[in-house]
Amino acid sequence: MIELAAQVLATARAMNEAHLNRGAAGNVSARHGDGFIITPTGMRYERSRPEDMVWVGFDGATRRVADSATAPLRKPSSEWRFHRDLYLARPEAGAVLHAHAPFATALACQELEIPPFHYMIARFGGETVRCARYATFGTQELSDAVIAALFDRRACLMAHHGMVVFGGDLDEALQLAIEFEALCEQYWRVLQLGAPKLLSSAEMQRVLARFSEYGKQR
Image 1 (cartoon, rainbow, N blue to C red):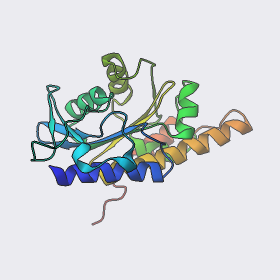
Image 2 (image 1 turned 45 degrees about the vertical axis):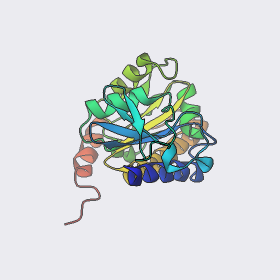
Image 3 (image 1 turned 180 degrees about the vertical axis):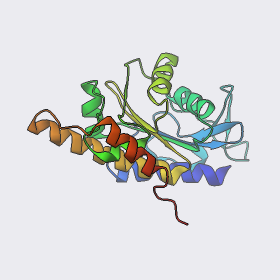
């Protein structure tokens, strides 16, 4: 378990290095057994150790990720509920990343859904990227809103908050988050020019079909 905890921490640090996040904001988790390992609440990643990560069961129970009884038992991220609910709702989810990325957050603060202005919208599972309705951070209400926005999607905005993405593993989740923030920046810039011109639903369906083989090597 400690090896996966180290990978979770490394991903959280990489998230900050990629300018998706700053300080102790955001959170990262990876599925492990009948629960997941998640970053602790309020701890700066550069000052954290693998032992500071927390295992959270699907029943909400917590335990240390290190074998030593003297290792600290930290409190998990305040957003552990939507991580748990996402793992339960989406069996293909192996890792979840939440960040207050600048361009994603700017769009989220305007409660904007991202329409098909670019074909790469399909990378995240549909013709649009939804914005989850606002709810207070750390609440079950917020988790319910996020799970609804992620139905048939791999990314969503969170109103007045940030972004959530998930992947099959930590590396994929991080790469998707980086791509999603780039897409948010592109959409923000397009909005400066006026109303965006959108691809048709028929074209997006063709793109989605082609994405079923995207990145798969023979």
